[in-house]
Each structure stands twice: as structure tokens, then as C-alpha cells.
Image (cartoon, rainbow, N blue to C red; front, side):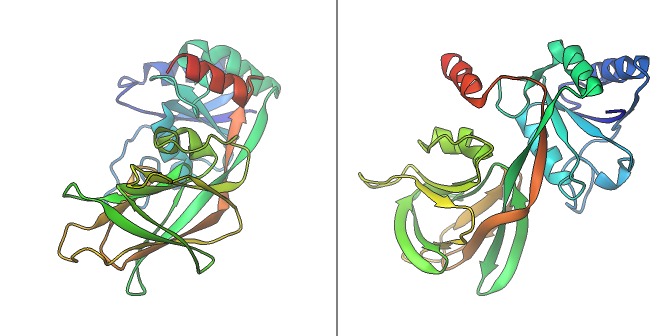
Amino acid sequence: MNTFYVITNYQKDPEFQTAGMIRDYLESKGRKCCIQQCGKDHPTGQYRYTDAQKIPKDIDCVLVLGGDGTLLQAARDLVERSLPLLGVNMGTLGYLAEIEHTNVYPALDRLISGDFSIESRMMLQGTALHQGRRLLKDIALNDIVIRRNGKLRVLDFNIYVDDVFLTAYSADGIIVATPTGSTGYNLSAGGPIVAPQASLILLSAVAPHTLNSRSIVLPDDVEVTIEISARHDTDMDGAEATFDGDTSVRLNSGDRIVISKSDRKVQMIKTKNTSFLEILRLKMANP
């Protein structure tokens, strides 16, 4: 790799100190490196953190400095460019940002020499509907979560798979996750852990009000529809659907959100030979 672009979380790297060190190191090796100088200042919501149109066309790799949250934002912003991403962790231990900022130079050397691999990660696309009218359409690398909004009360959900009724839940929320997102909110809710290279759709209820609720693992070629049941009064606060904990839309009784595998994928760079199982073991040993 010869040309690099650095996206940094300016709250964790406010003076661009780490980003500047990375640029200086790459330039000392005869490589080209640009640093994003702006933050999340776009008022129309066309991107979350990074304007993909400002990234030069000849970039080989994007280095994302921050944590898993920063990497999620970058992945969604740059999905149309299909640029390979490498996360540099400057926060707590995560699953997505595999390189610690204190060990970034050996990782850069491996990128320069071509000693790395690229994993494709599936994404979800979701469309929120009110009486057939589209409220919001967006994508997610980790998960799409439908949860209560406002008053502390139970929501009732009807779940359909390919327009066939599957089950109903009474719960605080529903998580629809990718394998990448299986170690996020899905894990906290008791959902299954799935290797991130897999291509599956995971459904997990949040605090279900039943004794026999289980997560559901579905193939990646199905369409999942989640309907907010109209059993409760419609004048209550309703629900909210969030995409990777970022963009959101309000939902009321009778509204639906239709979720399926996106045709977009995120390209994640791996410079270590550490397996997912080893990362999982380390995370479990140091929660």
C-alpha cells in the first residue's frame, strides 16, 4: 500500500498528535498520507463523520483512530467507496479496532509490505414504514435496534420472515444484528456470538417478558419484518429504531421496519494472525 487516509476521533486525539505521528512515519517510508481535518459538522445527515467525496481517489487504505464507535461511523460513511479500513484503538478494548495506538508502527510496516489480509463484513439495510410510507432507509454494520421510547413500558412485537408470521415478543426491544454486531448489544442481551466472517441475521429480544424466549439465527437471504403491535394505546410514546446507535426514527403502533442483508459490504483489514476465538477469549478474560 502506498497512499493512506487517516480519520481520527478528535475527542480522543484532539491535537491530531497520533494522526500526525502516523503521517510522519508513513511519509518517512516514502508513502503518501492525508489526515481528515473536519469533524461531524454536516447538517443534512448525508454522512455521520466523514465526507467520502473529500477522500482522494487514489487512497489504498483508511486508518480510523478512535474506537469501535468511530470505526462504525467511518464504515457507514465510506461504504460506497469500498475502501479497506483498519481500526486503531485509542479507547477501551473493542472487537473492531484491532490495533492499539501504542503498537501502530509495526502494523503500518505490515501494510507497506503487503503482509495483511482483508475480511468482508456483511451489513444490514432497514426501511421504516408508516402506513406504507417510507420514514427512513439506512444501513448498519452492527445492528438495527427497535426499542421503547419515553415511558418505561413493555412493547409488543410481531416478527415476520419473508412475510410469514414467525413469533410475537413482549419485550423492551428487539435487536437485529450481523455477525460483526453479535459481540455488541446483542451479546449484552444474551444473544449468540458469531464469527464476524459469517453471513447470518440474528434476532434477540431485550429483557423479554417470557420464560422461554430465545434468540433466533436466520440465513442471510431472508427479509425480516418487525411490526409494532397495536395492542397498546396509540397515544403512548411509541418506539424508536436506531441504526448502529446513530441514525434513528420514531415508530408508533402499527408501524413496520423491514430488514434484510445489504448488497454493500465493509472491507476490514487484519494485520495480525490473532484469530477471532483468541480475541474472544481475551475479551472474556478481561471484560
